[in-house]
Image (tube, rainbow, N blue to C red; front, side):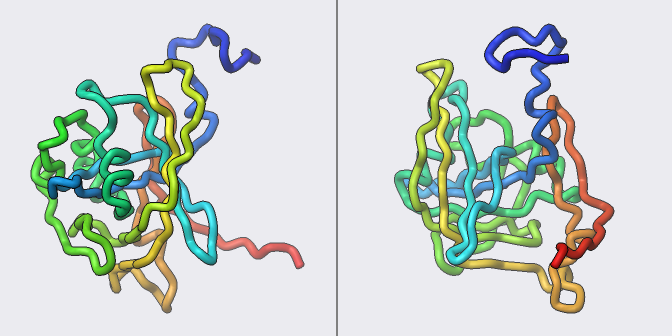
Length: 202
């Protein structure tokens, strides 16, 4: 089949996200200017550069109560943490996707523990095996088909890295042990169980 992306596709649900899959999940923790912790998963997320290492996540549209807390907090405070979402934490990750009011702490809502960060103020998810402490670089506002919905990409520089010791094998991050969670299309998710090595050509 073929369809123009901005025209009806004739399928029961929009297939486009399934065509860009799997996507890693950035489980972003922030803290508001008033000191309230926030935690939310973003599947438009990835690492984008090295030297310095930088990451991005994209926030699309509002919550029922207004702009998403994550992007508001990052722009106001200049800091965030990426916590790795894993198979073992899948239910907790899903709980933190609920459109809660800004005064609700998602750590408490999902029954998660907090750990202090080393270089930024937002807390880390205690149960997560990897954390990237980030300082805000900039926001790139993207076009939006609905002028009431903000589409924005947030860029952050990684300044601190936490890796659980038991997730290292011979000094390498063991992805098979981590079992990272990723987002597919629709309500589908995937988990990384099989890992293989393939050398680049000379």
